[in-house]
Amino acid sequence: MWGLRISVAMGVAVGISLGCYRIVVGDPIHWYIIGGYIIVVAQTAIAPKLIVPLAYDSGGVTTSTVTVPLVAALGLGLSETVPGRNPLIDGFGLIAFASLFPIISVMAYAQLSEARANYEKRARDKRS
Image (cartoon, rainbow, N blue to C red; front, side):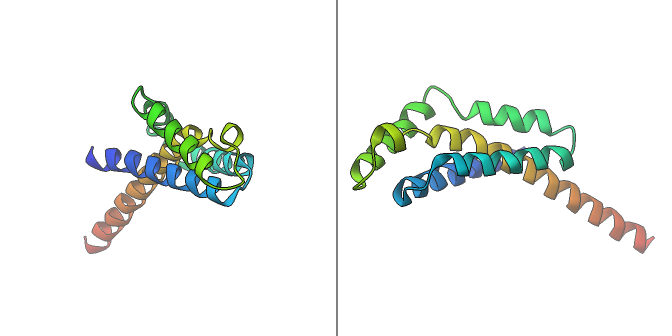
């Protein structure tokens, strides 16, 4: 269970970090969101079927009453501080990253766990 919590936290951290990078560099947000959802759709097809609903739910859990104001304030403050950025255009979008990347990280965690279990099972079968 700890691994799942850590993967959600890592997903939020990676998402917010990538969103901050996008604000500093000035890239358009739609390329990041489209790329993220392509990864989510591909992972949904190959991830263990029991984890997919939990992964999608973990994306919604990250947008709580505490996270949204803090992340929105971070995005607005960063876009206002970086020269040439418009807070209305560049400031919003971090919340989308904070809810997209936990989905990716939870499904990746499940895929890695399943691959490790299969590897260990094959190793035990070879020894027997």
